[in-house]
Amino acid sequence: MVTTRRETAVEADSALEGARVVIVEGRYYEALADELLAGARAVLEAAGVAFEVITVPGALEIPVAAEIAIAASEEGGEPVDAVVGLGVVIRGETFHFDIVAGESARGIMELGMAHALPVGNGILTVDTEAQAWERARVSEGNKGGGAAEAALSLLRLKRRLEA
Image (cartoon, rainbow, N blue to C red; front, side, top):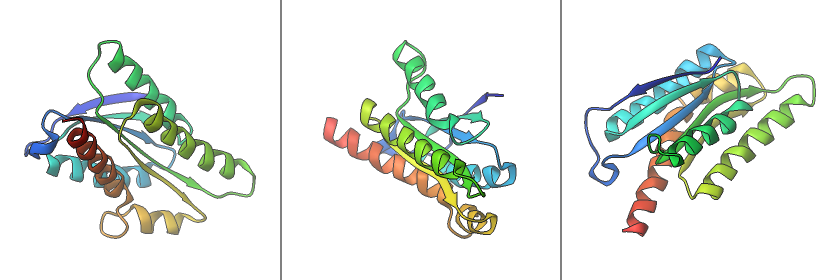
């Protein structure tokens, strides 16, 4: 199931005025996804950036959903100024981990390169759930917030260079 919701932040960062970020979150690990999203939301809200959250089942769907949002933007839909991908991939006993971890990261990177679009990769690739929590918790690693900060940093750079 894919869901979307739109949100707008209250305060504004003048370098990011009018920006719209799409967060694509894989919800395979619900509680971890909530924590990653909380970190990303806090950063975007503090920057005064409007954002939409698109929810997909897992990490492999993140780049595809982001590409769909970008394509819709290019067809006259709402603009996409940056993308933040959030998800968790925990190593199991099969080769599947390597495929999901590598392909989701590759897909996110290709989006940025193909569209000259700022992206933040907040897809955790870990060996254990404990490692995922250390990285996801807003009070510890805050990788969701870090991914949002990375996307905003690239957006600021893009705007400065295009001005």
